[in-house]
Amino acid sequence: MRAKKAKILFNCPGLLPFAVLSNKNKPTGIRTQAAIENLNITDKTLQSNVSASTVVLAALVSRKK
Image 1 (cartoon, rainbow, N blue to C red):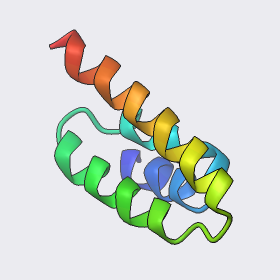
Image 2 (image 1 turned 120 degrees about the vertical axis):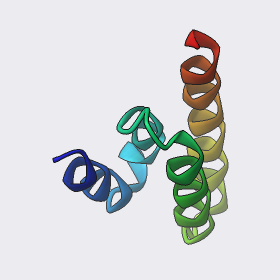
Image 3 (image 1 turned 180 degrees about the vertical axis):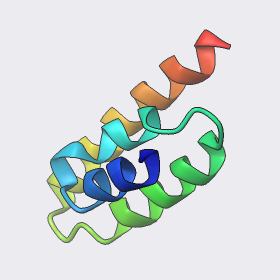
């Protein structure tokens, strides 16, 4: 089920930052995939905003450990 949720998040750039919250068991893989998907965003302003949001959420998840 979690893989399905992550896939949905990867399909919508606005939800991409939340993908890092979708799987705590393999956070590195999810972060890598989110970074790759972020590179596919053609609007550079949107790409920058999504990247910043993703980093913030990833840092919060990592910090909880």
